[in-house]
Length: 383
Image: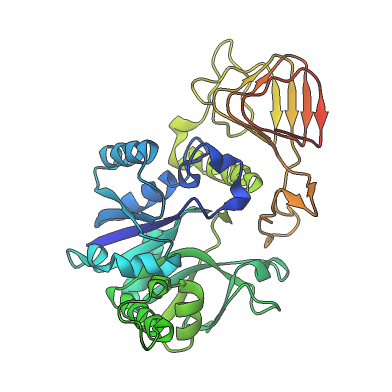
């Protein structure tokens, strides 16, 4: 028996994803035509023996999230439940807080996936590696170039045994080109070190004359509090993958992740790809077209919000921020939209219910909701 936990965070996180997360929670933002975390759920549901999928986060269980969970349960014929944290508890605090729910039914192991990653999710391969050599923690790792590795958790492994000998989250100097993908497979024993961190936090934060629990004791960071502390002790191992992987931290990275998923749809979901139809648009490459979309415009490197209208012969074009195509180890640079008070070149974002008449040119701009435009804009923010 297996379970999976998807860490979806909360509204106070993911500020680099704004303004996309103003209208919809980031985990439900569509990537390649479906909500971001649906890719995770699909991958988990395909693992033999999967019995339950739990979402842990600090979002309010509003109507869109509730509807998504109900639809996911029906589609995958699996229990998919949301467990709301009482406060933001970090990447490990929610696992410890809801440990009884995770361990209910005595699962052999459970996957833990960060919501804001794009991957082909080699979960079955991770499970095979875990069963060959059982340890409390198995991390999925990939490679990055020396400069970009500093933006991730870096792993030093034993190349023969794949034990994690050293782990540093976002180091200041080069440590290793192996980085943490934010996808894990834990044994039930993995919760014991989280308990130790909780008790240590409680002891450190407890005032001598203040009885009861210290509120901050529940905040646990998997990367710093657990992985860094236990590296080199025979408890953490890494499974390397050369498959697709990227973080989804910004609007530009959401477009890049969509392209990665679309490239896999020929094998995984050919029904989602647009096909040539008589009198329809000419399809080049892997394309997803929403059923409500009508095409008579040019839209490049852009995200167009719900309910928006782009008139005929209008052109909406942003600046792509893809990894360096000449560097096979290059990763996505998830920069913010602004630097030193200036809008950086980036993809174009059109908010919901924006109306763009015909023959309007928009380049590298952010247009927020309820706006009607009548002329061309370049490198501007329209509020």
